[in-house]
Image 1 (spheres, rainbow, N blue to C red):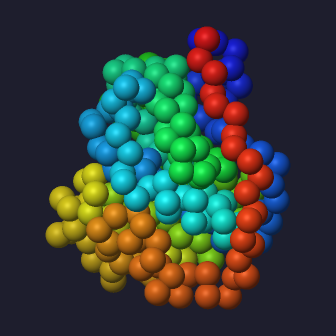
Image 2: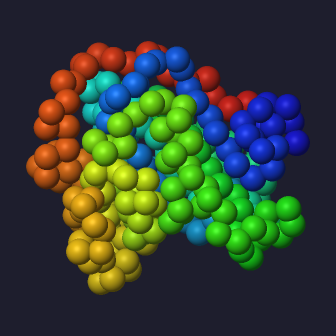
Length: 239
């Protein structure tokens, strides 16, 4: 494993944290996004850059949050690493390709967190119910600790109920299930009454989810900071 890859692994094994830039987000709401099925098309264990296919509205949605001064944070389970289908170098290559697509739309991610641990993983990734693995809220809490964002005022968008459950556990105020990825399959099991005080909804894709959250009151009391971009992140280099 290259040094550049190891520098992102907070436990030197199965937990990835990549913070980009030094922008201050203390007390701001955040936009938390699942990756597969929300930002990129679901391809069943995405471990190769050449297989990356972006959700058409992902770039414009991320850019919209960038311009409003809202940090965009990816929280993704990576069971494919845990099961041995690909490694962190493959994950990094995929992330670099995603960054390239986003840069082409003047958009950027502020933080990426990933958890490779899985109950059926191969050693050393064979950990049951790891705190970072959704539906638990460890990745969101780690992001909050790093960025100082206000979770109650934040939004999470995912294509699985477990994504929203992770947000609920962390105290996130708004959650939207998208019909892309696994969302259409999850929709029949979705019940807004099962999410406590978190305001929830369903939308066709990431951009529609963003707009639905705004209509539900997200950012109602937040003064946007247009032009808050601090530049594009350096890409992960795979040696």
